[in-house]
Length: 264
Image (cartoon, rainbow, N blue to C red; front, top):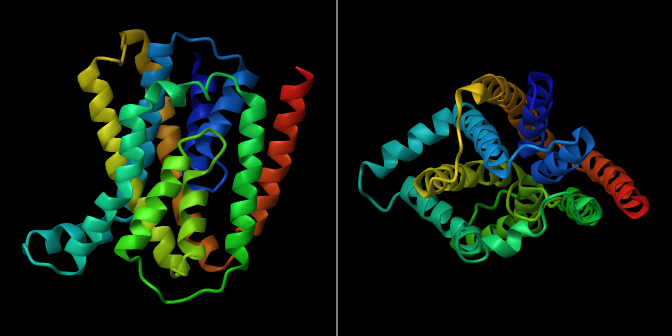
C-alpha cells in the first residue's frame, strides 16, 4: 500500500464512520477499486488503526459529555450518568455476541462482495429515508431502546449497512429525540472499537513491520481529521432532518455497486 492509497482510505473511513453511508461498505468498494492486495494481517492492522483514529475523533468531539459521564460514575450513585453508561453496555451486547461467536460467518460477507454491499446500501437508504420523515420528540433513550438500537448496530456489522445510519434511524423511529439519538449512536461505538482493538492485540492477529509505519501514520491522521469533521457535521444534519440526501447517495452508490458486481 502506498501513501496515497492510505490517505484515500483514511479519508473514506473518517467520513463514512460518521456519515450514514457505511464505512465498511465504502472500504470494500474502495479496496476493490484500488486493487488492494496486501496480506490479510496487514489489512487488518490498517483497519484497526483507522478505527482507532475515528474512536479518538469521537472522544475529542464528545470530550465534555464523556467527562461528565466519568464524573458521574465516580460518585457511585444511580444517577443519570450511571444509567447512561448501563444503556451503553446494554447496546453493546448484540454486537459483542456476533463478534465473539459468529466472526467467521461474518467475514464471509467481506472480501470483494461488491453486489452484496450494493444491496445493503439500498437497505441503509431505506432506513435513512424513513427516519428523516419521523417527527422529532424530546424522548430520551430508555433501557429497552438501548437494546433495540444495539440490535441495529449488530446488523450494521454487515458491509453496506451504515452503523450510524442504522443506529440513528432505529433511535429516531423509536421516537427518541434526534440530537440525543446522534449522541447515543456515536458514544455507543467507542467501547466496541476499543474492545475489538484489545481483542486483536491479545490474539496476536496484528502484523507490524517498520515498513508499515508510513502508511499507517498518514492513514490515521487522514481518518482522524475527516472523522472529526464528519462527526460535527453529522450532528447538525440529524438535528435539521437532512438524512434524505444521504439516502439518495446510498441509493445511487448501491445501484452502481450492484451493476458493477453483476457485469463483472
